[in-house]
Length: 187
Image (tube, rainbow, N blue to C red; front, side, top):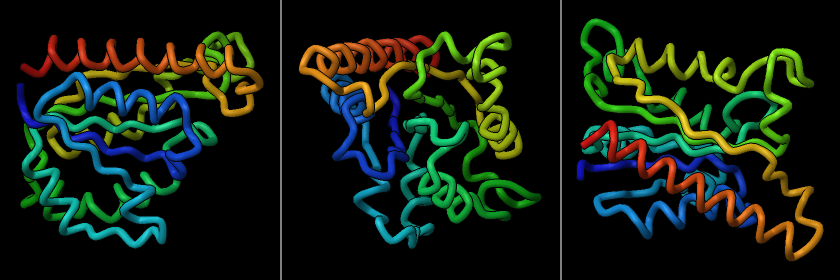
């Protein structure tokens, strides 16, 4: 298995059930996997971009793991990308450090998956919200593998032990689909 780097973009992972469950399951079932917990590393949003670049350079597969906040990446993950993906390093005439690396997006939403359709409440499919990430991937010469998505895992729905158990099960299934995507496309 190749070197897999997971960037956890949740801004408060300790209060998460789904994203924390996905990450725990991934770590348990994948060798050569390292997780960068941005909420722990950079609670002040002061990104050590040189350190982050060194992790990215060692990775063969990069997974962006995050909950969708206001139809995009959480602010911390966005700041991480803004600071780390620098012209001349990740893109531009001399920026080739990410070229050829594989990228997978792993995301969750509080709203159920059924609401992310053209004729539903959100008015768009979930893949429509990934265009900026796909464009960044293309600009950096990376291989966009695809995404794994699970909806209906809102913290507001944790009203009972059964509801939490259902979210935990969704997280486990999400991690299994993600592991399969890695094995099918990145080995």
